[in-house]
Length: 466
Image 1 (cartoon, rainbow, N blue to C red):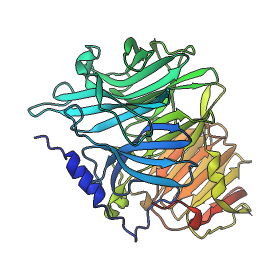
Image 2 (cartoon, rainbow, N blue to C red; image 1 turned 60 degrees about the vertical axis):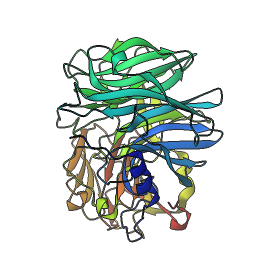
Image 3 (cartoon, rainbow, N blue to C red; image 1 turned 135 degrees about the vertical axis):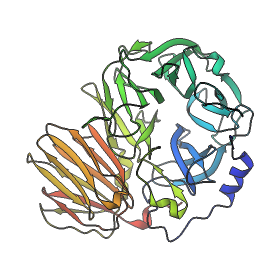
């Protein structure tokens, strides 16, 4: 039988939270839940100089459960404020979860769209029957107080070939129109992205879907349109893709299709490119800030895995990635950590090839030029990064808690940039052409590299505290 935590129980769990002071895994550069479970970043936007970062939040359990929207703000990506819970599952149309969604600003008003999840009592599979996925709309002038909720779509409004699984509205303004994309699963178990158009953010007209001629997973989640320098991309997180030796190695994947044209139109999409090949990356979302940058933040986690996180012993699980700036280079997306983080650097040192380096702790950044065909980097006691015979590999031992190897075909490795936090690694290859994100639970600080490199360390007293 279906059981759901109520909004009041979620509120009490957050108000009675306790953060363990003896937690060795708590991150110092990344956003994480104060307690409980975190997943998808939601509603990313900037208004009046303040960045709003909402996220899927279950403070009542490290294993997830009924979702609310947690809320952080920042003005500089260096200092953050935990603003508590913004949206609770407290109406008939979202009682079983305020699921993922997005924000767009129009006439100085934030318009937030999200999926209201409803699960009916009874004998249901919750794919073909028993689940309501409602597109909900609320507005806000400050990101803290919200209008009454309006329902834009229910399952009865979606194309008849769709199952109950239609969710994660992402709205983007392109030209003089607003476009909404929704992730979907068809009744014959094929992933689709539904496309809608609006001129006023009140009425949306269905324009068709994005699909492949071949079967490419049974569900496409967390879609988004990215418009960069005349290139239009469709981001999504497909589920049900068979793993290959060098591709699609996670249980659920992430990436993008390059679209035809500069205005979204329904079309058959073809070549899929992964955004991040690491163990812990899913449901990325983008927004354009007041500087004109397209910024991406992803969920540094993944559901349904056979590897684990010892952070559960300390009352929390998962985090968000560092904010990354997207650019289009030769028709492909590249990712680099936003420049604000360089302000946290307090020391810089060059380390020669094959010399053992042991920084004071595991919060640092490496810049490594690669000059030889074969490359190796040891991080901590049992993390190894290699490039040999055209194959890049990240290999982890017992401190990966079930994470073993991720690899990709790569003809040439020119450089690496590595961001290390207490229990995470974010690795960027060839100026951000490839990214690889993982959690790691090893206090050892040993670094040995086959190439000379520069290490930047950070002063802990300047890092944000939550």
